[in-house]
Length: 640
Image (cartoon, rainbow, N blue to C red; front, top):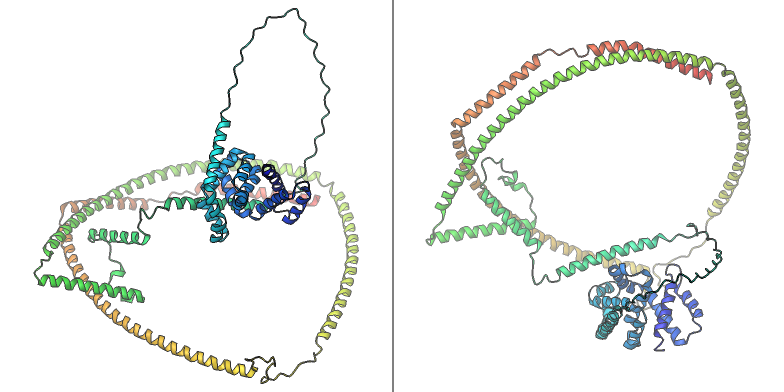
């Protein structure tokens, strides 16, 4: 038995190849296999049947490993070897403890050594990583750890020794001995010796005619298999992506990264710091409505009110601490801040001056470009007017040519109409014959319709009588009924047995007690809500006071900035360079306005004179062509 395990496994591989999961039942297949294996001994037969049935039952478990193996080494392997990989994987996971390492190594060595070495190395190297995760998703994690992962880990050292032995055999087989090089032996020419008589040609073997291929309509593979394969490929890709992410992120504890919340908070702090460095430029637009004093109309939730209150308390604490430090003799850096603000205001005013100069220079360049465009437009209008006059002359010539062609066509139509008059009589006879056939057919169809209508009426009357009988039987009253007393028990002689009226009374009392508890709970909740609401209103009052104080300070700062801006505008109004730029801009504007007035005062050219004459000349042509078409249509109708 031990020496024949290799041949037994090959028999199991052949038997597993014959099984088709979508078309055959496992029990029927096993019964048929028992008949085929009658010549074998009982232990061999039992081993083959147990291995085949186990591979079919644990197909989901084995497909996890086999599909991943083919995904990695699929180019160098064929799908025909999938059964032997299934059997080896099943024996390693479920039968290895019963067989032992010696019998398992004999089975492995009886098959292709290279493929077995590659498969076992792949299986045991990925056993505790993604294979265990995939098996845990199919079965219970504790069951997988106890029955499959634990025994395989115990056998891993012996399997590694077996893999080393297989690697040695593979390396020995690859070293092929080179054949010795044969030296050529010189022969003398034998000119006198005659050539031997050639052998007669053998007769041609009659070839069998090619059989016709099976048509595609006899069997079509189900689409579900293709859909399942696509789903498997997608799941495989997802598993590889998850594995890659897990391998990349497994050492995150060594190099901890900041969370998304901390990153957002740091970005917000940086933005606020950068916004403080811009110092509210004077050329910016008006502040948004959210920063105005009357922003109390915004409704805040409870959390926002509590946050605002905490912020106000923090600011008050800072102010009190600063006042205490000043009282104890500390210095306030107010002089440095005033000096810094003055420098920033001076820089902003200089920047505003430069922007004014750039603005006027840009306006001047825009006006110059508008003048150039106006001149280009006048040139294009003159060229377009010349092209229109030329096209009007060409249209007039085309109208004259068209009139001549219409006259020729009218003569031809008259000749054709004269030839069609003789066929009119024959067509009338054919029409009368067709009408007679139609009348006969209509009479026959009316007779058939009348017969069908009578049969349908008889069937309808029969169905109506049957419906009346059924309704009459259903309308009869059902006699029966039993008087029921609510105060009596059912008589089952149970300890807690009660009547229906008693049950209703107890339920009503229970409902009243529940209602009273519910009302007390609601009253308690309303009181808590009232206290919280009162506390929030007080917090809102404090927040409103703090906001008003901030708004008043902001208004004072705004007034100071406004006065400084007015002084700067007065200084800019006296700047000579700005006055020169404004004067240049006004001159260019006046020149452009003058050109517009001259253009509007010019009389409009009479553009439609030629077109009008052309239309007058074409009107008789249109009429003549319509008359020819109408006459041709009349002739055709008469001929039909």
